[in-house]
Length: 366
Image 1 (cartoon, helix red, strand yellow):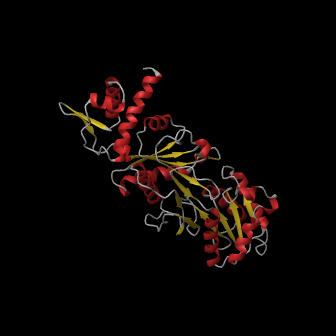
Image 2 (cartoon, rainbow, N blue to C red):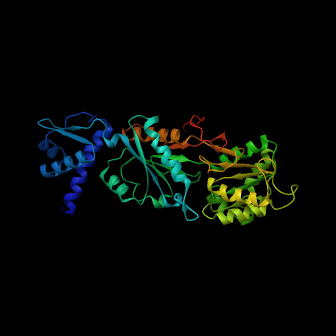
Image 3 (cartoon, helix red, strand yellow):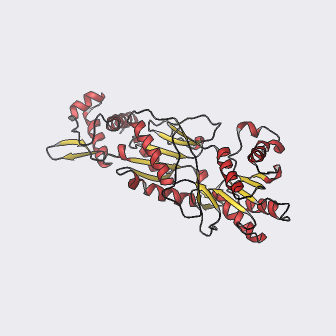
């Protein structure tokens, strides 16, 4: 088929799918005849026939002998969602991250939390994702990664949710705002409530803003230290470090630098703003023979903790499956033409030790 013919075929598929998603042609609706569809979409009957054949193959349409074609009971345009992960989320220190396993497990629970809905976890480089996007056969996409890595999922006419930092311009249907400053202060308050006031911070770059990056290195985290001081703690500027979570050896060495000193001179609380920093930090604590929480109180912003994490490590996070299902609801509403809030503010709660709570209190909408 020529490029023009292929374009016409995709156009007919998209228009049928749009009517399915909008509710104009709900499940079980009988499709008009091939000739009527050809006239409606300004296409040839043969193109319409090929489009219907493709829709039958992917489960959008069913055909019956002498009964023509009708919309399936559970068409994928209404039910199928994708969690697309950018390359920066996939590997840490040369190995796949446990973030992937956690997200995959959470997507498997979507059907339990929202019966009839399905979500699959894939990489943005997956050619099958690009094909699904081109065909329009998705109810929505939740993208986790840089906007620059999202060409296959952006601007495709499919409702898209993505994560943004406070000073980033919203660019998707639903923009999930991660305010790392607020998350940090949640951790700080947890430590202060335990009587730990000398607080050190290992950041993954999330505390950096466009404005702070232009300041001299010695001034970039001054506002963070001031925020800790106002909350009632102490945080020396040299106790705040930006560490790439994909460089565990740097996290390990930075932790040694912070804590290899007399107990009266070192921090007695450590905030980790990335769960991938936890394994090298724990290795450094073992090297120094420091115990949690006797010698040091440790908190980590995480939805999942690796095996071997001490039970008394403070975890702040949320129920990922519940969070994903809420985003799925927003994307489904958007696909049906219902207005949804463009900004969704993510909040976290203290969840205690490693077991992931499935009934954790969650956040509200913007």
